[in-house]
Length: 169
Image 1 (spheres, helix red, strand yellow):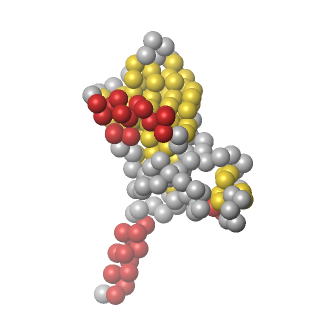
Image 2 (image 1 turned 90 degrees about the horizontal axis):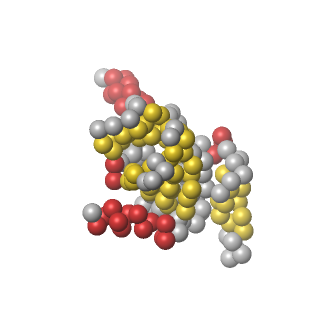
Image 3 (image 1 turned 90 degrees about the vertical axis):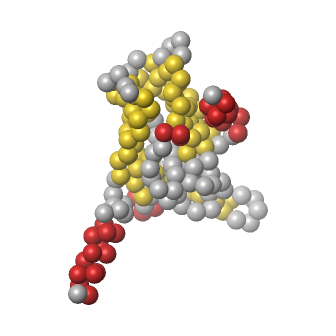
């Protein structure tokens, strides 16, 4: 009986895919959806650099040689990372840049309220925000045809104006 309980626990824990890639889909409307691939962060798979704050403590400032988002002060390693994000509009798949995007949220689950797609004169602009409770950041992509360009990735509050407009609708 004890071995059955242990096997059940291992199967339950294994189903959460520690270290495995998790995929999630968000439907924005009938012809637009976003697919993301996330996984737990493994520091051994990355080059992590620390920087001196000048205040007698260091912080994680670079991952794989680049700044990263998802932490207020970089005191800890990220918990998860966004490996891939694809938006599909009217059957056309468009890759979105995800470099430097960590701690997308606490459960590695995408939510519709994290995104806003706005039609523009050139195509679309996709706005998104990510947060695991600390280290909130926003990302803006310009989408033209079947291509995208990440225009903004920032934790600066002035880039969150799109959320205020969304809430007022």
